[in-house]
Length: 151
Image (cartoon, rainbow, N blue to C red; front, side, top):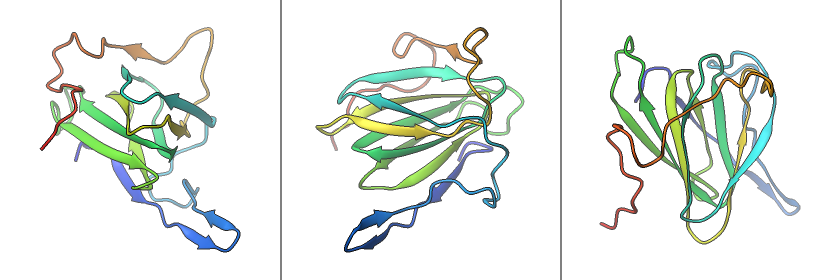
């Protein structure tokens, strides 16, 4: 696992009215601070990425559909520099993934419906000066290909 990445298995609590699951709590051992909450959607087969942040840590939860979320540790000072982590998250695997600042990340919609990911970053988005740095999803030196892998 990339240094600083955490995965929290989310417990689904169902009843006859529906279900509930908590995503992020202030008493989680990895909680830092609250910046904002937003939803991003990725269509089936589409790649959104790569990018990283210098200031914020992200907390991803896929609440609808399924997404492949991939992380690449580009931090030269990190003990896991060069490592890749891949997570399949969503309705079939309700998890929260903590993505530390400096770690490149992207997502791909998998399955047949739009994947919807909620992010709870540690800092609010600054429209005039975004803390977001992009890398082309396919033309780069990252040791990862977004192709579907049929086993």
